[in-house]
Length: 254
Image 1: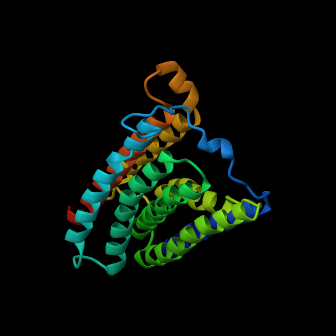
Image 2: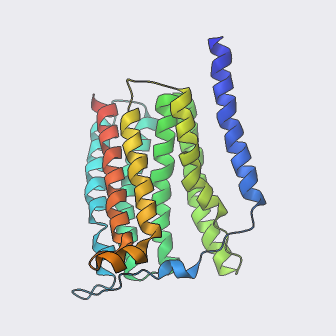
Image 3: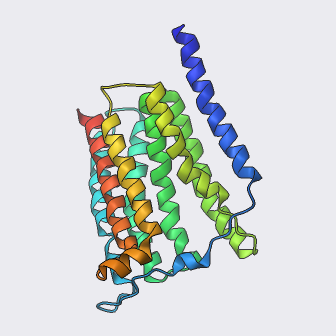
């Protein structure tokens, strides 16, 4: 019965993956809305345009550096796949800080590559880690290598389609949002009190709040007057990343 249940849970996750991928394929290509580059807080300080959106990326640099040091301490203490997932994730966090700052300094489709590409490292490595810990170590390792390639490809594919006038963000959207669908199922199917389920809820809670503040960027800036929704989005996203850092700290050294 246990074996049947195990294969049933795996089948459901694979089925959700396939159905989501097929559904996305039936959608029309999603071009990058150029209005996305028009942020509400355009103030310039000390010669830096969009100052608040630029400097609010500093927490990513700090947490990314902390995570890279954590990964170095973990080298040789576990599998190579586990080390690489940790290292790639926090390199991605550090590069997200640099790339996002670069993008907000001069927002356009080209600079957006440097923001989104390292974020795919974070999404794919973290999702693969959850599969590695909750579902199966071998499956988690293969998912990591597979999604790492697909994630990077999704960014270059999107930019190429923008250049030829047929912008298509669907694959990138899949890489970013499929884990949001899959992780709750994993937590339901593979309950394990010894892991970090509670901390995962903090991560996703902070991430959802970040997306809400991003969506209401202008309204929040008009209401508060001194800080925009997008700046707060960066800080909440950094909080989510800090919770991720705590997860890796616990799983590697507890």
